[in-house]
Image 1 (cartoon, rainbow, N blue to C red):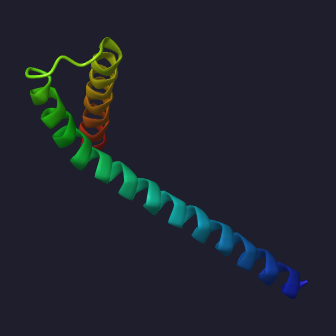
Image 2 (cartoon, rainbow, N blue to C red):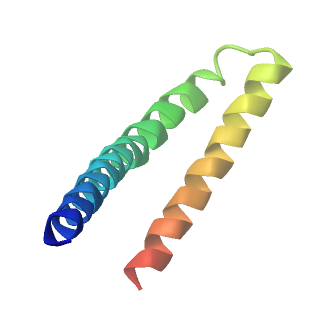
Image 3 (cartoon, helix red, strand yellow):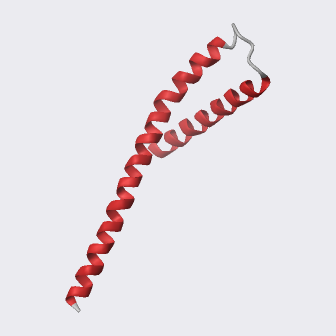
Length: 80
């Protein structure tokens, strides 16, 4: 019975380690997005004054700006 319990504990530890790794990868992705996307959007937005992109591109850029705003709000709320 002790062997079964030890096997169960080991399996749960492997599962916990897997999800911990997934969480860290997702956090790294989110941090990259928080840092890179706003900068890239600002660069793209600045070029829109010199080049008139198609309406679909403008809509996409505005959508991205909204998502970045939501991410910033979520980060700010999580720090409180």
